[in-house]
Image (cartoon, rainbow over all chains, first blue to last red; front, side, top):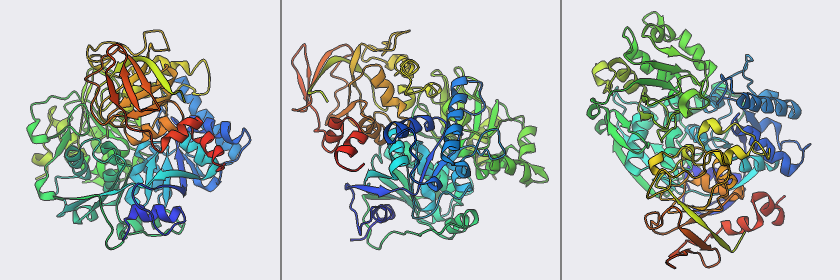
Length: 433
Length: 185
């Protein structure tokens, strides 16, 4: 019987010919990523169990990307970055460390990893962040873990996993110009629920998916965790391979589904039947459509994060905000320094995206996770009171972006930008004729 | 691992995510510093909206203001307990506050794994919904060997799913002691 991409990658990393869903196996790890929130705890677990003077299992495979609490006066948060700095120095991990305040600083880890060539087809990536699943867009097995598992990998280079069955989601038909990957994934999560893929892999396929650029594919895989998924994955094609080759010289192994691979379920959607989609408070599976929520007034709009803070997201927002004025405070947070540079260098009708956002009255912050997960009180864009925010981020559980009294609606950059112009939730189609 | 876990229940609803278990701005304290790490106990479940905290009545704090230990030892949840982020601070915070077990219909994968591999608490699963049949403050007894949960006052019992694969890790303490015992480290 044939295997899925996920099963094949896991089998290869377990040194076996085949694996079946449900089997517990030990697999070798290609990359371990951690950041400032979970890095100090991971380092603590590693030292406690492997010894104060132990070395990480492979220096070239440990990547440390501080991104969560960077631009804050919080002394605990700053101390945590200092702990990472010391560890990097002690272990000689400088090549894979991106220090805040230095020209090497990157920003959001899930966007920084591919920019720096650390996401490659056929590999196994673990990270101490639930959105590590983003990297499945590159045809690899990528998932989030806690400090204990990460501390184990740091010393041993391997981890046990339960082989997940694969749910396959096929989008038929190229994306209409008013839809983005965010609409597709919110549509799926609304369909299967926020535990609809628990313990399972989610594979995306169909011409609606293969027509997406690499950043949009990342958005799809990024939110599988919001359906409980273990990993998201997309079979590599030329788009994937060209991107990866442009970022690394390291060889990689393209893995595809076997003919006859067996799927737990296959769901087929027609992109022409989907319209701009919104997740209402307080859960990513509380699905609505923008056109039916037009009476909901918002007090803030937010465009940023690993989910919605990439160049494709800002190009979409700029297409709507160009020459217009935001009616509510609108916060723009590029995911990484590379995206920030892109905002200044990419132009529309002679103006940079940065200039377009400034002219519309938006507030532009420095690259980091920022208010996507609330964070310290002085975090840029944080919801410190009963705000009603429409956001390109990934979660809207109570208090996710700050105050428990706030409400968060999740939507695509098109929908968020259109809503910013009216002060109410707005279907972007009227701005995209 | 104790054979019998007895204590007061703290009841919650469905989809209790990690931001409700330990809000993100608290993820900055040291986990291996005895004094500083008490803050995780202090703020455990502080992100749960008041009306949903300590069901069915609500408005019951899991940890009293200024304290870091809870009077509740067993948390009763619904579906998809621990969804959201990968922060191990979530089961850690519940453990720090004194919780020994969570009983829920289902779990998010990473929370479940962190609870077991870090040895913080036992995540029991139930076949049916039980968070509408137990009230916050009820005295509860869990018999680990026979996989049953009992309301002490009424004697009413509810079946729990067997622990399966994770039992050996929980018995060892955590994934490291398990791996050492199994000769893997």
